[in-house]
Length: 300
Image (cartoon, rainbow, N blue to C red):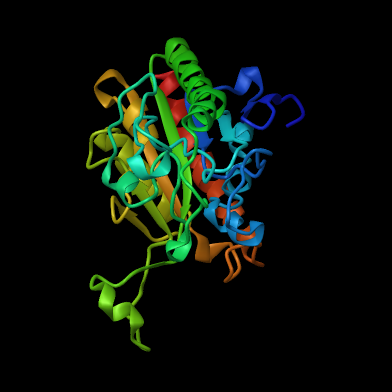
């Protein structure tokens, strides 16, 4: 389409709109595919490793969404800098310097305590992200300049579509490692380590709380019709973003989609594989089917 509209707060987020006459109450967001690294992001992790923290190229996998009438919102900044899929309260003591005296209370989750909260403290293989705890003013700047504006932009678009159509379908887009670790961690050191290959696609609705059964089943069927294997809430149920926006009792439906990186990335999870275009085409088929279902609901 040549009449798509794009707005951007450079380095923070980009919103792509469909042609006005094609718009439907469907929105995709990609919060973890950002590749614009802020100049004050000083970390011990080399860049060639740091990019493995991205949901690499997920924004490109779903880039055709506006061609089918959907709005697309993407974070430009990397998740390792500040994670849009965490609450701003999800900070633990070890990541910041001194006693917390910020303008809000902290409510660290298990993810924060394990080093992968709002501000990531631990990278892959238990590597420390920083030489020392971060100054609190730096953490607050990341929240105020990146985290909050992304959430505000996404909420604004969801509210706009809801106000216009009376319902909205939101798809929160991610990628996941190809394999899961063994149930018993000690087994991972064995030469025949029983890592388990995940499904092609995992959908998450926080155990049925963020999307209606109708739209959950519709999306599962469309994923399967697009040639993918699919599981629901296993092992990813959805985190902060779908929790915020999924209120199916008021016709606000939000679901997380995780795409297996083994389908479209090379073994190092840094570059596209030869199958990237094929997977992109199959996801286009999914988006086209979903947009058709949403459009038919608009016309009822």
